[in-house]
Image (cartoon, rainbow, N blue to C red; front, side, top):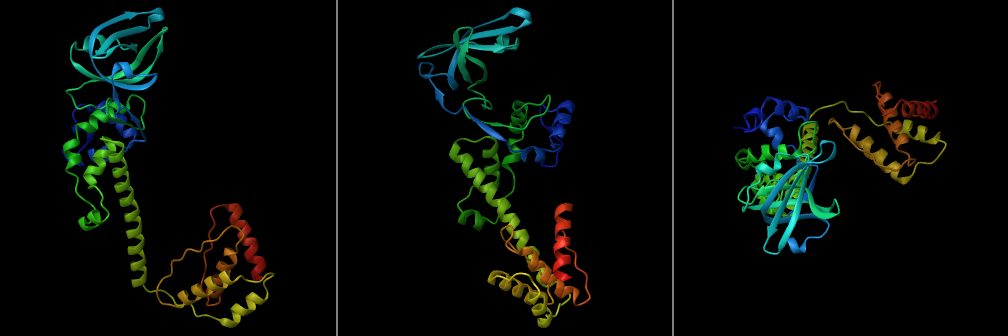
Amino acid sequence: MKLDSLVTEISGVGLEVSKKMAVLGVKTVGELIDYYPRRYDDFSDVQTVNKIRPGIVTIKAVIKSTAGRYARRGLHITEAVASDETGSVRLVWFNQPYRAPSLKSDQDYYISGEFGMSYQRLSILNPSIELVSNFPLNTARIVPVYRETKGLKSAQIRRSLKNVLPVLRDIKETLPMWLVEQERMVSRAEAIEQIHFPNSQQDLLSAKRRLGFEEVFELTLAALLNKRDNALGLTLSIPFDEKLAREFVRHLPFKLTDDQKRVIWQIYKDIQKPQPMNRLVEGDVGSGKTVVAIMIALMVLNNDFQVAFMAPTEILARQHADTIHNLLE
């Protein structure tokens, strides 16, 4: 199995399940591995029965007895008693008739769920339950919760990810090793495994830090490569006309600030060079960014070239058009 293998190659994923995964944008093993959880439920604190209190709990216990019955209006109730060396607690599942025959007596289970009142008795309601001897996916750990779709729950996604662990663990490093070591980060493979199957909150934080660093690093590197490519390119040089600039400023109904003057002069120097310019001008609303853009456009127009002045909405575009018309009248 490889990253580009279809999800149907995963054990337990048939045609119907693959169609549901496709709704989530997951068609290959690699896309499943990159399908990160949206949140986590922490069931990692395993307690003894005598210490549990109402709320989310996890215990390690054996099943002593089970029984299933139908209540009013066809409601099926499965009840079991789980015990450890400190006491016993009642487990209750609603409309899960398959539970009773699937539970094995006198074997250790991890049991996680909401401990609260049911029919005037304290019980763990609709718990997840897994044999301790198995790799726990839904109990006794920090459990990832994924964005779901109809007919495809997080538990199925977790089982599928468990079955591709060998592929996940073989993921190649994407950052230079010197950078990984310098920043004291975990490997990419370890980070992705901990995102899906975190051993602890600290391991989860380390995984998020690694993947977050990589995302920022890629964006920064792409920007630097783009800047380098721009520097290697050739473009038109726009000569600076001091008389025109002074005439425009003289007719403005306000005085330019020192910041505006400094930015305009920096851009005027840039557009005289034979390399393309790519610049971001930042400022609060009303700080005068528009007049900066107009002064640059004016110098370009003066050299018989065209200028495209874009805005994100039609209303703003019309406002800019009015402002430009009035300032260049």
